[in-house]
Image (cartoon, rainbow, N blue to C red; front, side, top):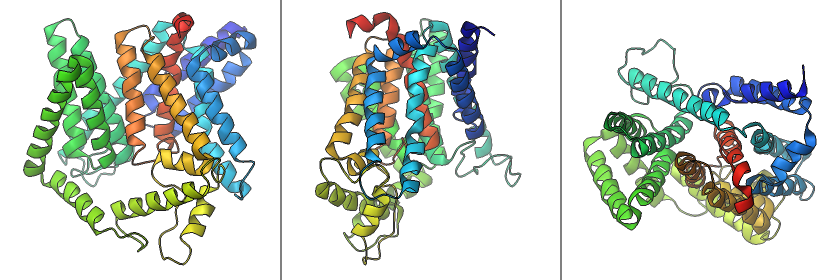
Amino acid sequence: MTQNKLDTLAKWIAIPIGFTLPISTAADNILLYLALAFFLLGGHYQQKLRSIMTNPVAVAVLLLVSALLLGGLYGNAAWRDVLHYWRKYAPLLSILFLIPLFQDKASREYALNGFMLAMALTLFLSYVIATGWFADRGWFQGTAENAFVFKLHITQNVFMAFFAYLLAIKARHAVEAKWRMLFGAAALLAAYNVLFMVGGRTGYVVLAALLVYFCFRWMRWKGLVLATLVGITVAGTGYFASNALRERVDLVAHETSAWQPGQGAISSSGLRMDYWSNSLRIIREHPVLGVGTGGFEKAYAEKIQGTGMALSNNPHNQFLLIAAQLGLVGLVLLLYLFFQQWRAAAWLPTLFEQDMARGMLLTIMSGSLLNSLLLDHAEGLFFAWMSGVLFAGLRATRQRL
């Protein structure tokens, strides 16, 4: 088999990862490793390296990954902890080999449509589960009260919020009225699924961030007013009309107000408050370089020793985790990556890709306020795969960056 055919095979193996991402961890792992293997066998290393080094997003990824690798060489973390975090962040490297693979527009469209198809299937099945028809049959993970399908509720809600945004973009850019109505109705169904059918408060935050950006992108400053009015209306109506939503909101409010620093919370929100406050203490003591990659768990254990607070290897905030591990240097590199992605999105070939790239970035950034999304397999690979596919489109316009 020629090198060109091996590269083509690598691309066609990487394309369906978009479909498997919301559905199967095993499948996307197999596809990812196979795509990497054929990419390496495909040769053309000089050309591939040029594609990577002339892409500002890829360069920013290299800087962050290099810092994470170097971060494992200092601090007092055991090697098993260092290797654990290196393995968790490894999907970021896939951005580097996906960018050379997805240089042509057709392959990017196939890949992104595959993701949308998987999310449409997830949305349909979620509504089916909500009917209770499959109760006690064990076919899917969720229940009628919490209708998640393939992934855990937090992951599904993050992906579904992004899917609702994509459908809204489709509706906005559709030329024919029938397609505008179809995509608009589907967007509303996806947003309803996030808010009222699946438990996952991270999804609420992501959906709110995407609503604000969508309205601003559509109507500029008037859009912010519209987003505010829509948000208040939906939140108010949902709070009084939906027992499930009201219970979730009231629970967060109660747990947050009941939290006391240093007392050892047991509630979900209280634990997060403990994680955040103790992580900030670690950052204050190691502000420049942090405690090293893999050093968070040990540093956290030392910080809460004798307090009765729960141990943690994850502060459930990606920004705090990076700052604790790599200090302000690491936080700047993470923000630099996000900045380069936001900036580079303006130069993608189509308006849909531009809006999709910035929506993906807002999904990860807003979701990372409540979870360390780059550590989670599905969300971390979602970020890496989407970044590789979308920003591969910069090749034709990189001279303008």
